[in-house]
Image 1 (cartoon, rainbow, N blue to C red):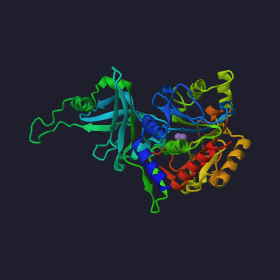
Image 2: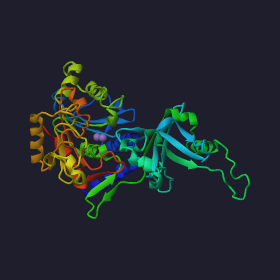
Image 3: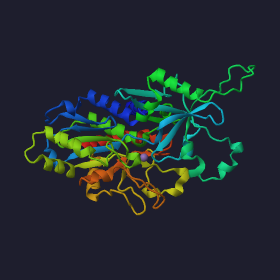
Image 4: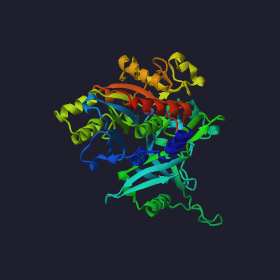
Length: 453
Ligand code: MN
Ligand code: MN
């Protein structure tokens, strides 16, 4: 299984945006015989296809022998992670103080503790689309030869006022701007003109860099998706190397294990499906998120290519309503340093296997999908049979907070859904912690689930 973990570490180190994850997932799927559904006109049992939605979310299908209207076995993970997005007009220079510092202005994405994102190495990853339609891939900061970027913080010596603030005010969202360059314009200290500051020089130089390296002009940032993400690779954590620390493990840890379980799986009975969705961290919004027709449109494309006997619209509805789904998303790991937040008998622990989360939500389960016991029993039985270790947990103690996943969007189709994923320590921090054993158990769990009758 070391191979699985090593490959996982490579996957999250090399793919820090939803676009990169989609691209990599397509590469992996194609190696296993999956084809772009747009290039396939008919489907029969055994066929493998994927639906690529705007290069930001991906749905894979492996057609089973059973009538699709009896339902599919679906794994649903998300591939977006909290980060700082560049604004549409992001490059500016501090001209008022004549520091010559050039910044990237950002707007954070997803639930972050803002103070965690300062004073650490950051990389810029994403795409810029030019008006002629060309898409330029930008990635600076992850190659050890690259420069990195950083958001500054106040030194403790003069932070008395800052230290009085609450953590949510400690670093303001608007101040999450990363240093791109510093051109103080001093070339010779003997030069009497040394204090001469040319406003805008620094910004022009940064823009010139973007133009030279990527062929993009300042206007082109208006049609860009550039994400500031933690720079550097995921690593094994601890002397015994049983843990993994890395960026974006929520939810790429479940996305990767779901994907590998899917592409390696042999579908015989029910059709298998694996969803890698975008936008979960901001409420599954948009055309690439699960609160859209992403899934039913994809299933409609599949049904349109199958030889179905009755009304295709009814087949699609039945296929969805009769499906089993594991909403493969992460759960919070019990944290001994903050034990009072958890009900230890209903918490997930690092290294104890994949986690069932019957319900997420907050304030009396609000927003939860709340899985049916009939379905949980079925999944339990399958995992006992398959020797997969699992644990049952809630996020934390009642009323200490809450969260959600894509489970309730899938449940809207009437299918049986259970949240089931890997537990994560320091979730949503720039560097999140998981257990290699749990990653392995998640993979085994997803593999077993896809063969469930
Ligand atoms: Mn998640
Ligand atoms: Mn999350």
